[in-house]
Length: 195
Image (cartoon, rainbow, N blue to C red):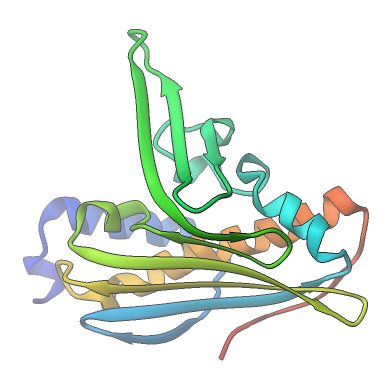
């Protein structure tokens, strides 16, 4: 299916994501019409427990621009298996709104948080997606690795949407790294896209 035959809503979402994605990109490690894998790795001069505390403080590093409510403060992670990567807010008429962006399937403090769910436009598509944020002690700090692997069927194919999602998640990876540095008072060591 080519881009012109994609439904208008899907084209609009991809275009909007591409605009937000322009300044920063992680890395599309693999992609095909049925799947993609994104990866970003950096090193922070902080211990894994400090980085974990930053990871589970979602409003500190997730962009409000990539939320349904427009406020990062409405986002939370319940860091336990079965926990929710959720967004909750009260609407203009007092209605209770909520979204489960993903379900936590693994939580090991200072080591890994893994969530299953389609973020953004993937939420309404028949896809299976896994976001892993791993922390590994290294000389002088913590290696922070974020990967997002998704497979399924989406208008235009997974390879076509991968760069836009890559840009958004790549920016969040950089935000996470920046927030870990800010909270611990440490310095940035190095960051690179995964190849």
